[in-house]
Image (cartoon, rainbow, N blue to C red; front, top):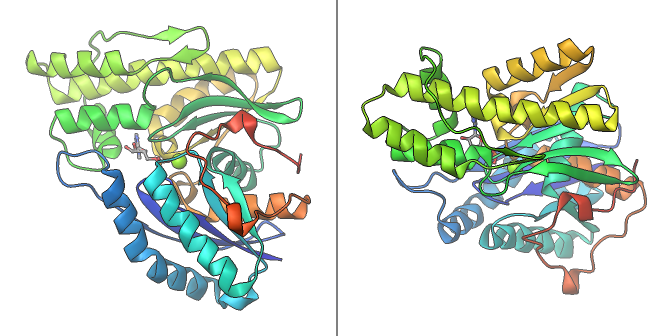
Length: 327
Ligand code: AMP
Ligand code: MG
């Protein structure tokens, strides 16, 4: 069985192909880049997705060495995400489904980040730290659902780093630039904001921007920004491990590419005698392959396809509201 997966929740328009053995046959994407100094402009991102969708699909089918008619199921990222971007994905997927008669599955984007992580790392039952542009959640599978043990109370860690990067006039994409500066920095104090299992990043970003105006070096601020926010993330993951009694930790989402965050989690897991793994870079940011694979899981376990007439986007669909019929 082959599933075509379509991702469009934010910057990235992606198309992937996965089979029911867990092989990823294709993972193609095209990413919208906002004008210098801007965050994502949702209507522009939608236009981007609509413009590139046909070409990305063709590239994905070509890398998979398959034709559209060889697919059995179509899955798309139904939410959460920016409504205009989600609509680009919904309309494109619906059209394909109408044209081919293939069933259309709606996939939760956050759950897809976890599932591609489990597939590629072979971790079975991890506590997941899902860190992306818009999302920051500590998640574990308990009593039939992916439960959120803690999350950001304001912005996601990726958007927080991006916000600092924009204010500091660094180049897009900001996360990797901050990581490079951080390698040569020393410690300066920034607010450390853990509230129970939840986190807050916006105050730290304001303070980091203020510290930059006060003539601290970019290196020192980037270093301290990473050390502070990543220590916060590591603290809540450790507490989730202790609370659930699980022994594996999975790092997934766009910020998972950060080597220092990987190192901190790895040290923490080692000290507990647990196992740590990170999703490979190719699948850490938003991508179509993770949607294809989660579509396979949902379809194989008997979830009903969407009714094309009333299929809608779900911009605020939460991880813990998602039916997990395959575990
Ligand atoms: P996603 O929303 O999952 O596609 O992830 C995108 C986010 O990942 C953006 O906010 C990027 O700044 C962030 N990101 C990508 N690479 C890195 C990195 N090496 N360090 C920190 N953040 C990163
Ligand atoms: Mg994402």
